Image 1 (tube, rainbow, N blue to C red):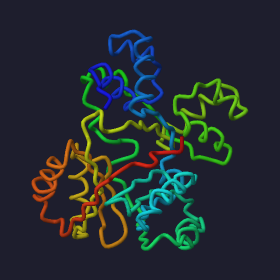
Image 2 (spheres, rainbow, N blue to C red):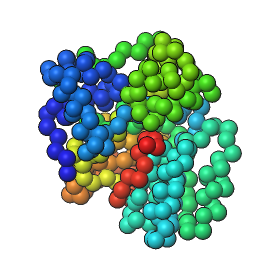
Image 3 (cartoon, one colour):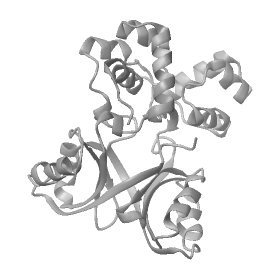
Image 4 (cartoon, helix red, strand yellow):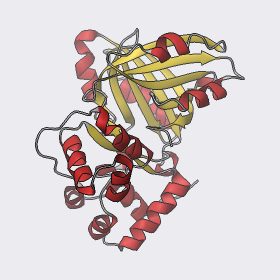
Length: 315
Protein backbone atom coordinates (compact mmCIF):
# COMPACT_ATOMS: atom_id res chain seq x y z
CA UNK A 1 0.00 0.00 0.00
CA UNK A 2 1.20 3.52 -0.83
CA UNK A 3 2.32 5.44 2.27
CA UNK A 4 1.51 9.16 2.37
CA UNK A 5 3.70 11.60 4.26
CA UNK A 6 2.75 15.10 5.45
CA UNK A 7 3.48 16.72 2.08
CA UNK A 8 1.37 14.15 0.24
CA UNK A 9 -1.54 14.66 2.61
CA UNK A 10 -1.25 18.44 2.33
CA UNK A 11 -1.29 18.18 -1.47
CA UNK A 12 -4.40 15.99 -1.35
CA UNK A 13 -6.09 18.50 0.97
CA UNK A 14 -5.11 21.36 -1.35
CA UNK A 15 -6.61 19.63 -4.40
CA UNK A 16 -9.70 18.81 -2.33
CA UNK A 17 -10.16 22.58 -1.91
CA UNK A 18 -9.31 23.56 -5.50
CA UNK A 19 -8.67 20.82 -8.01
CA UNK A 20 -7.29 23.28 -10.58
CA UNK A 21 -5.03 25.23 -8.23
CA UNK A 22 -1.65 25.87 -9.95
CA UNK A 23 1.26 23.88 -8.56
CA UNK A 24 3.11 27.17 -7.98
CA UNK A 25 0.33 28.38 -5.67
CA UNK A 26 0.12 25.05 -3.85
CA UNK A 27 3.89 25.04 -3.39
CA UNK A 28 3.87 28.57 -1.97
CA UNK A 29 1.13 27.71 0.54
CA UNK A 30 2.75 24.42 1.57
CA UNK A 31 6.27 25.86 1.72
CA UNK A 32 7.74 23.49 -0.85
CA UNK A 33 8.95 23.92 -4.42
CA UNK A 34 6.74 23.71 -7.49
CA UNK A 35 8.86 20.76 -8.65
CA UNK A 36 8.15 18.91 -5.41
CA UNK A 37 4.39 19.43 -5.82
CA UNK A 38 4.50 18.23 -9.44
CA UNK A 39 6.61 15.18 -8.53
CA UNK A 40 4.29 14.21 -5.65
CA UNK A 41 1.23 14.70 -7.86
CA UNK A 42 2.63 12.36 -10.52
CA UNK A 43 3.47 9.71 -7.90
CA UNK A 44 0.02 9.86 -6.35
CA UNK A 45 -1.56 9.52 -9.78
CA UNK A 46 0.46 6.37 -10.42
CA UNK A 47 0.32 4.78 -6.97
CA UNK A 48 -2.89 6.03 -5.33
CA UNK A 49 -5.18 6.53 -8.37
CA UNK A 50 -5.35 10.28 -7.68
CA UNK A 51 -7.26 12.23 -10.30
CA UNK A 52 -9.11 15.54 -10.54
CA UNK A 53 -12.31 15.40 -12.59
CA UNK A 54 -14.68 18.17 -13.66
CA UNK A 55 -18.31 17.18 -13.18
CA UNK A 56 -21.74 18.78 -13.54
CA UNK A 57 -23.83 19.14 -10.42
CA UNK A 58 -26.81 16.89 -11.31
CA UNK A 59 -29.53 19.17 -9.94
CA UNK A 60 -28.12 22.37 -11.44
CA UNK A 61 -27.48 20.57 -14.75
CA UNK A 62 -31.09 19.39 -14.97
CA UNK A 63 -30.28 15.72 -14.38
CA UNK A 64 -32.05 13.05 -12.37
CA UNK A 65 -29.73 10.97 -10.19
CA UNK A 66 -30.43 7.33 -9.34
CA UNK A 67 -28.79 4.58 -7.35
CA UNK A 68 -29.53 1.22 -8.93
CA UNK A 69 -28.92 -2.00 -6.99
CA UNK A 70 -28.43 -5.11 -9.12
CA UNK A 71 -28.04 -8.71 -8.03
CA UNK A 72 -26.32 -10.92 -10.59
CA UNK A 73 -25.17 -14.51 -10.78
CA UNK A 74 -21.70 -14.91 -9.16
CA UNK A 75 -19.77 -15.63 -12.35
CA UNK A 76 -21.23 -12.66 -14.27
CA UNK A 77 -21.26 -9.79 -11.75
CA UNK A 78 -17.76 -8.49 -12.48
CA UNK A 79 -18.24 -8.58 -16.26
CA UNK A 80 -21.57 -6.79 -15.86
CA UNK A 81 -19.98 -4.12 -13.65
CA UNK A 82 -17.26 -3.53 -16.25
CA UNK A 83 -19.87 -3.21 -19.01
CA UNK A 84 -21.83 -0.67 -16.98
CA UNK A 85 -18.62 1.26 -16.31
CA UNK A 86 -18.21 1.89 -20.04
CA UNK A 87 -21.52 3.75 -20.20
CA UNK A 88 -21.49 7.55 -20.21
CA UNK A 89 -24.57 7.73 -17.96
CA UNK A 90 -22.98 5.85 -15.03
CA UNK A 91 -21.00 7.89 -12.51
CA UNK A 92 -19.64 5.36 -10.01
CA UNK A 93 -19.99 1.63 -9.64
CA UNK A 94 -19.27 -0.52 -6.60
CA UNK A 95 -19.14 -4.30 -6.29
CA UNK A 96 -20.87 -5.25 -3.05
CA UNK A 97 -21.80 -7.97 -0.59
CA UNK A 98 -19.90 -11.09 -1.57
CA UNK A 99 -19.45 -10.07 -5.20
CA UNK A 100 -22.99 -10.71 -6.42
CA UNK A 101 -24.45 -7.22 -5.89
CA UNK A 102 -23.61 -4.11 -7.90
CA UNK A 103 -24.55 -0.57 -6.92
CA UNK A 104 -24.38 1.91 -9.78
CA UNK A 105 -24.96 5.66 -9.71
CA UNK A 106 -26.81 6.79 -12.84
CA UNK A 107 -27.29 10.33 -14.14
CA UNK A 108 -30.01 10.89 -16.73
CA UNK A 109 -31.59 14.01 -18.22
CA UNK A 110 -34.72 14.81 -16.22
CA UNK A 111 -36.87 14.25 -19.32
CA UNK A 112 -35.03 11.14 -20.60
CA UNK A 113 -36.58 7.79 -21.46
CA UNK A 114 -34.44 6.14 -18.72
CA UNK A 115 -33.15 3.54 -21.18
CA UNK A 116 -30.70 1.99 -18.71
CA UNK A 117 -33.37 1.61 -16.04
CA UNK A 118 -36.29 0.47 -18.18
CA UNK A 119 -34.78 -1.34 -21.16
CA UNK A 120 -31.09 -2.19 -21.01
CA UNK A 121 -30.92 -3.71 -17.51
CA UNK A 122 -34.07 -5.88 -17.70
CA UNK A 123 -32.89 -7.60 -20.89
CA UNK A 124 -29.65 -8.76 -19.22
CA UNK A 125 -30.26 -12.42 -18.41
CA UNK A 126 -27.65 -12.70 -15.66
CA UNK A 127 -29.45 -10.13 -13.47
CA UNK A 128 -31.68 -11.75 -10.87
CA UNK A 129 -32.94 -8.64 -9.02
CA UNK A 130 -33.13 -4.87 -9.63
CA UNK A 131 -34.16 -1.95 -7.46
CA UNK A 132 -33.85 1.71 -8.47
CA UNK A 133 -33.81 4.60 -6.01
CA UNK A 134 -33.90 8.23 -7.10
CA UNK A 135 -31.74 10.58 -5.05
CA UNK A 136 -34.04 13.39 -3.94
CA UNK A 137 -31.51 15.53 -2.07
CA UNK A 138 -27.79 15.34 -1.33
CA UNK A 139 -26.96 16.48 2.17
CA UNK A 140 -23.29 15.64 1.76
CA UNK A 141 -21.16 14.35 -1.08
CA UNK A 142 -20.18 15.49 -4.54
CA UNK A 143 -18.67 18.97 -4.27
CA UNK A 144 -18.03 18.57 -0.53
CA UNK A 145 -16.70 15.01 -0.60
CA UNK A 146 -15.16 12.85 2.11
CA UNK A 147 -13.51 14.95 4.80
CA UNK A 148 -11.10 12.15 5.70
CA UNK A 149 -8.80 13.49 2.99
CA UNK A 150 -9.01 17.09 4.26
CA UNK A 151 -7.15 17.09 7.58
CA UNK A 152 -3.66 18.30 6.71
CA UNK A 153 -3.86 22.10 6.33
CA UNK A 154 -4.30 24.80 8.94
CA UNK A 155 -6.91 27.57 8.78
CA UNK A 156 -4.62 30.07 7.05
CA UNK A 157 -3.62 27.54 4.38
CA UNK A 158 -7.26 26.56 3.80
CA UNK A 159 -8.22 30.22 3.38
CA UNK A 160 -5.37 30.78 0.92
CA UNK A 161 -6.37 27.82 -1.25
CA UNK A 162 -10.16 28.10 -1.11
CA UNK A 163 -11.35 29.79 -4.31
CA UNK A 164 -13.84 32.66 -4.15
CA UNK A 165 -16.57 32.28 -6.76
CA UNK A 166 -18.85 35.32 -6.60
CA UNK A 167 -21.91 35.88 -8.73
CA UNK A 168 -24.60 33.64 -10.21
CA UNK A 169 -23.64 30.64 -12.30
CA UNK A 170 -24.60 29.76 -15.85
CA UNK A 171 -26.41 26.59 -16.97
CA UNK A 172 -24.75 23.96 -19.12
CA UNK A 173 -25.65 23.85 -22.81
CA UNK A 174 -24.88 21.43 -25.64
CA UNK A 175 -22.02 23.74 -26.61
CA UNK A 176 -20.29 22.71 -23.39
CA UNK A 177 -20.20 18.99 -24.29
CA UNK A 178 -16.62 18.99 -25.56
CA UNK A 179 -15.43 21.04 -22.58
CA UNK A 180 -17.09 18.71 -20.08
CA UNK A 181 -15.79 15.59 -21.85
CA UNK A 182 -12.22 16.91 -21.57
CA UNK A 183 -12.65 17.88 -17.90
CA UNK A 184 -14.11 14.50 -17.01
CA UNK A 185 -11.01 12.85 -18.42
CA UNK A 186 -8.69 15.21 -16.53
CA UNK A 187 -9.94 18.17 -14.53
CA UNK A 188 -6.48 19.75 -14.57
CA UNK A 189 -6.28 19.95 -18.36
CA UNK A 190 -4.70 23.29 -19.28
CA UNK A 191 -6.51 26.13 -21.03
CA UNK A 192 -4.59 25.59 -24.27
CA UNK A 193 -5.60 21.93 -24.43
CA UNK A 194 -9.20 22.78 -23.53
CA UNK A 195 -9.20 25.41 -26.28
CA UNK A 196 -8.04 22.80 -28.79
CA UNK A 197 -10.76 20.39 -27.62
CA UNK A 198 -13.56 22.96 -27.84
CA UNK A 199 -12.48 25.15 -30.73
CA UNK A 200 -12.65 28.19 -28.44
CA UNK A 201 -9.89 30.59 -27.49
CA UNK A 202 -8.13 30.06 -24.13
CA UNK A 203 -9.70 33.30 -22.87
CA UNK A 204 -13.18 32.06 -23.80
CA UNK A 205 -12.51 28.75 -22.04
CA UNK A 206 -11.38 30.58 -18.90
CA UNK A 207 -14.49 32.79 -18.88
CA UNK A 208 -16.82 29.85 -19.47
CA UNK A 209 -15.22 27.81 -16.69
CA UNK A 210 -15.54 30.74 -14.29
CA UNK A 211 -19.22 31.14 -15.20
CA UNK A 212 -19.98 27.44 -14.71
CA UNK A 213 -18.11 27.22 -11.41
CA UNK A 214 -19.54 30.43 -9.96
CA UNK A 215 -22.97 28.98 -9.22
CA UNK A 216 -21.82 25.41 -8.73
CA UNK A 217 -23.07 24.12 -12.08
CA UNK A 218 -19.66 22.48 -12.52
CA UNK A 219 -17.38 21.38 -9.69
CA UNK A 220 -14.02 19.66 -9.50
CA UNK A 221 -13.94 16.43 -7.56
CA UNK A 222 -10.84 14.66 -6.33
CA UNK A 223 -10.56 10.92 -6.71
CA UNK A 224 -8.02 9.00 -4.64
CA UNK A 225 -7.92 5.47 -3.31
CA UNK A 226 -9.11 5.68 0.33
CA UNK A 227 -6.72 3.01 1.63
CA UNK A 228 -3.58 5.24 1.72
CA UNK A 229 -5.65 7.70 3.76
CA UNK A 230 -6.43 5.02 6.32
CA UNK A 231 -9.87 3.83 5.15
CA UNK A 232 -9.67 0.12 4.30
CA UNK A 233 -13.35 -0.69 4.96
CA UNK A 234 -16.26 0.77 2.99
CA UNK A 235 -19.97 0.13 3.26
CA UNK A 236 -23.17 1.57 1.86
CA UNK A 237 -25.72 2.17 4.59
CA UNK A 238 -29.42 2.04 3.69
CA UNK A 239 -31.58 3.51 6.44
CA UNK A 240 -35.31 3.95 7.02
CA UNK A 241 -36.03 7.10 9.00
CA UNK A 242 -39.34 8.53 10.16
CA UNK A 243 -40.18 11.16 7.49
CA UNK A 244 -40.76 13.92 10.05
CA UNK A 245 -37.21 13.38 11.36
CA UNK A 246 -35.43 12.62 8.08
CA UNK A 247 -34.04 16.11 7.52
CA UNK A 248 -32.68 16.39 11.07
CA UNK A 249 -31.04 12.95 10.97
CA UNK A 250 -29.54 13.58 7.53
CA UNK A 251 -28.06 16.91 8.62
CA UNK A 252 -26.55 15.21 11.65
CA UNK A 253 -25.01 12.47 9.50
CA UNK A 254 -23.60 15.09 7.13
CA UNK A 255 -21.30 16.21 9.97
CA UNK A 256 -19.85 12.72 10.52
CA UNK A 257 -16.26 12.46 9.19
CA UNK A 258 -16.78 8.73 8.52
CA UNK A 259 -19.24 9.46 5.71
CA UNK A 260 -18.54 10.41 2.09
CA UNK A 261 -22.18 10.59 0.99
CA UNK A 262 -25.49 11.33 2.71
CA UNK A 263 -28.61 11.54 0.54
CA UNK A 264 -32.38 11.24 0.80
CA UNK A 265 -33.74 8.66 -1.60
CA UNK A 266 -36.92 6.95 -2.71
CA UNK A 267 -37.80 3.44 -1.64
CA UNK A 268 -38.20 1.55 1.65
CA UNK A 269 -34.85 2.97 2.78
CA UNK A 270 -35.24 6.73 2.50
CA UNK A 271 -31.68 7.68 3.49
CA UNK A 272 -28.41 6.33 2.07
CA UNK A 273 -24.84 6.96 3.20
CA UNK A 274 -21.38 5.73 2.25
CA UNK A 275 -19.10 4.99 5.21
CA UNK A 276 -15.29 4.81 5.04
CA UNK A 277 -13.58 3.43 8.15
CA UNK A 278 -10.09 2.23 9.09
CA UNK A 279 -11.24 -1.38 9.56
CA UNK A 280 -14.25 -3.58 10.30
CA UNK A 281 -14.01 -2.92 14.03
CA UNK A 282 -14.18 0.84 13.44
CA UNK A 283 -17.22 0.38 11.19
CA UNK A 284 -18.87 -1.66 13.94
CA UNK A 285 -18.19 1.08 16.48
CA UNK A 286 -19.60 3.69 14.12
CA UNK A 287 -22.78 1.69 13.50
CA UNK A 288 -23.43 0.79 17.13
CA UNK A 289 -22.34 3.98 18.89
CA UNK A 290 -22.93 6.89 16.55
CA UNK A 291 -25.77 5.63 14.37
CA UNK A 292 -27.14 3.57 17.26
CA UNK A 293 -27.61 6.77 19.25
CA UNK A 294 -30.08 8.11 16.66
CA UNK A 295 -33.37 6.48 17.60
CA UNK A 296 -35.13 7.96 14.55
CA UNK A 297 -33.30 5.38 12.39
CA UNK A 298 -35.81 2.54 12.34
CA UNK A 299 -33.90 0.06 10.17
CA UNK A 300 -30.33 -0.15 8.90
CA UNK A 301 -28.90 -2.34 6.14
CA UNK A 302 -25.12 -2.48 5.84
CA UNK A 303 -23.75 -3.49 2.43
CA UNK A 304 -19.93 -3.90 2.42
CA UNK A 305 -18.07 -2.56 -0.62
CA UNK A 306 -15.61 -5.08 -2.04
CA UNK A 307 -14.26 -2.98 -4.91
CA UNK A 308 -14.89 0.30 -6.68
CA UNK A 309 -15.11 -0.53 -10.38
CA UNK A 310 -15.69 3.05 -11.54
CA UNK A 311 -15.27 6.29 -9.66
CA UNK A 312 -16.67 9.70 -10.64
CA UNK A 313 -16.18 9.34 -14.39
CA UNK A 314 -14.60 7.15 -17.03
CA UNK A 315 -10.85 7.23 -17.40
